[in-house]
Amino acid sequence: MSAGPLPTYRIAVIAGDGVGPEVVGAARRVLEAAATAHNFGLEWLEITAGGVGIDTYGVAIRADDIDAAAATDAILLGAVGGPRWDDPNAAVRPEQALFALRGGLELFANLRPVSIHPALVPSSPLRPVLLDGVDLLIVRELTSGLYFGRPSEERATADGRVAIDTLWYTEAEIRRVVRLAFDLARGRRGKLTSVDKANVLATSRLWRKVVEEERGSFPEVEVGHQLVDSCAMLLVKQPAAFDVLVTENLFGDILSDEASVLAGSLGMLPSASLGERRTAHGRFGLYEPIHGSAPDIAGRDLANPLGTILSAAMLLRWSLGQEAAARAIEAAVGAALDDGYRTRDLVPAATDAGGLRVVGTAGMTDAVIERLGQRPGQVDSGGAGDDDTVASMIAANTLLGLP
Ligand code: IPM
Ligand code: MG
Image 1 (tube, rainbow, N blue to C red):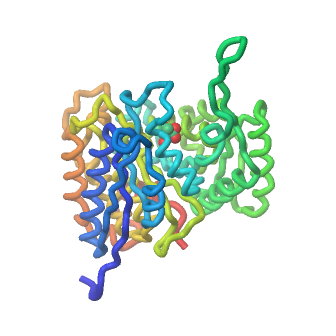
Image 2: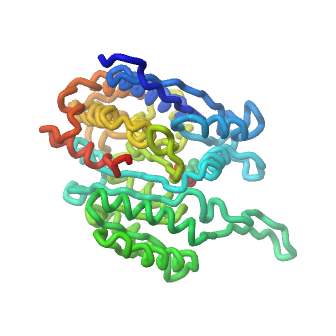
Image 3: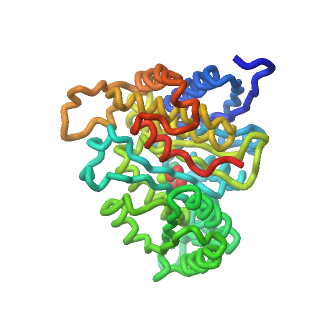
């Protein structure tokens, strides 16, 4: 035990709707266990937002709560939305909370790492040979494009209803996310694929020009351009060929759900949304699983908590500078999978779960916590361990080091 006061971090937590409270509760338990094992303290600021925000306050998120979240070290978010708030004519929608946080806090880069734990190869519908060596990172632009372009509305005209969304990008919006992606590629295998639809869209042609302008600053990175339709095909045909992908908001949304099939389940994938702003410990960011609120399984202890638990590891790494604790969580997740623990979504359709320990949200969380710090010499060293599966999880999740 070290002497002196423990460093204490403040985390805003937005559980949201559907399975959000269950998966966020799981990640909080894991973070608390990691804090105890690694000698730091955590303070939580709970914020009501999403559909529950609409029910409680009449808005998806209150402006004061965005300010309060901005004053913490990081935000952990579960999921928002559900059929109760799906009225297409509603003026307030749960997703507005996400956009207010992402846009309002200028979290323009959404990092979605995709790696395959060896034990989950049978959980993917792809042939094992295709999954060999898959370790990619999707960098999705998160605060512009069709999600934020105005106008975005439906109009009544003499010819019937018309709806319009606006695909808009400024040069600066493209440049900042492209530069971050180059930087990340430099810290990984040095390969960047920029994904666009330059044969059709003006925004994509500007995107391509900016990528070409930036490549000179990153001579060690090999850059390629890929049209989004063929990229979607290649992601399942030869996924191991990719390292870092950088793309606009909607393309990144779609391609990351597609890529989750490689990892065995949408429930496995974490994400970090980062901007330029630094805190005393790292970069300010928002961390959330890429899956949605899954209302059909909410409240039934069925949700896979690993995407949120791995998001919590990214939070430790990027926003708190707690690399050893981040690695310990990633190693514990790997160990739980190696020991056969599976939530329902991870049980291969073709098998009868023989030999696997099928557990719920709480059981999986317990399995991870039990394995936290189980091999402290290995996870605390910061160096490569002698366990290949642990090492590959770590390698896949170890992004650019903090400054
Ligand atoms: C995601 C989600 C959100 C998005 C939804 C819930 C609005 O699909 O984070 O990928 O489209 O960004
Ligand atoms: Mg999505």
